[in-house]
Image (tube, rainbow, N blue to C red; front, side):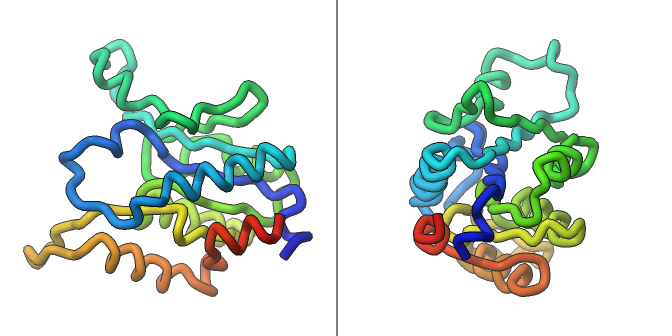
Length: 187
């Protein structure tokens, strides 16, 4: 695995303050951000490329309140360094109407490591597209998290079950599922 991560970009999806709001409900994996920060430190220490994805709603910035601006900011510890990349998106895929694909091609990325929020939304969609575009993603299962959801049947689905099913759906077809320890040992 060592050679797979040599110049592989770490893609950190939507680790923004709005996901800290209580209205999202119960969440799985309280250690997701800690694991993401461990990976970020490893990437920075080894001078590998880091790409932050930031979700910005399509409403015009001049209409945002001070509170909306604050919630769009990255969580503490996830502030990009000047030489790191920031890709903004307005939908759940980090590839739609962004320069992410061009950036990955410029970096000659054959593989990508993906972490972030939330597992079954932007992380899953970006991972699927990365796989379909030929980037061979590694999705770090313990460096992503999601929230409980109500299904169309009115039933409550637990965040951990949703998370697990996303890993099952992506495993071996769209991505290689790994853990933080797997990746750090390979660095």
